[in-house]
Amino acid sequence: MNIIDVREAAEFRSQKIPNSMNFPLGLLEFRMNELDKNKEYIVVCQSGGRSSQAVKFLEYHGFHVTNMNGGMNSWEGKEE
Image (cartoon, rainbow, N blue to C red; front, side, top):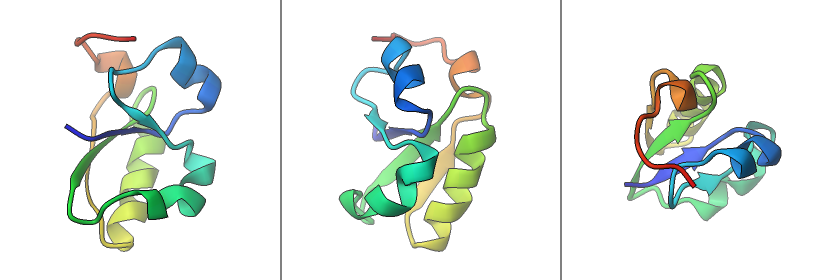
């Protein structure tokens, strides 16, 4: 599972899904070249708002992405 966390770095450091990548929303445009268009990604933020913006942006640029509904507020799995 490829997870992109679009929260700010400080939020990511305090609570994150294991093996997720941190691409803050404001930097996504500049870092999307690090992603592989042949992979599928799940995008997460705190509650789902920023990640829904990121999904629209990445879909427009040809990426296969899904928004994690509810974000970290709904995450029930392991955290780092």
